[in-house]
Image (tube, rainbow, N blue to C red; front, side, top):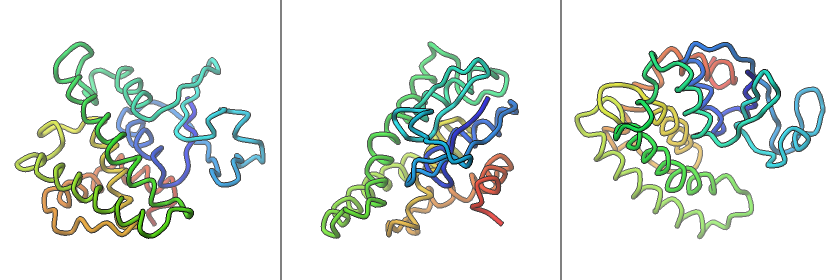
Length: 202
């Protein structure tokens, strides 16, 4: 398998999940500003969305959208318990978290990277994102991870998106549960390996 990624982007989440899975894969870096791959080819020729992540299978078929990719990976290695079994209420809870992170955090915080976003618009985004993150902080009370004591694919996505707060002027230092979660995730070997591979950790 190949994972098309951009350093620090939302593709970090399935990158972490792939590392957790133990499945073999290769990384292909995409420049999202120039929409070029490292070999100089047009990334739009690979995917008409021009976005990461993108997972390419050995047969040439491709799958986009991080939550879908992460669930696919988890289902290839059920013994790793990266996601609960399909059809269980626990699986729907993980999907509930994936959807929340996608719609309430990813798209909101991601807007702060847009250079065309005016400062008053950024202030609105920061206030809304802070409120949502405080809600997550409350949900993490007494838990190691979103689903309890065990890591799931939803944690990789939350870690990736909340990692953007430091670059976008959102202060989570007072959110003790979320801050502890971030530190716990950052210490996982699979996360360390992904961050190093993307040039985000020396």
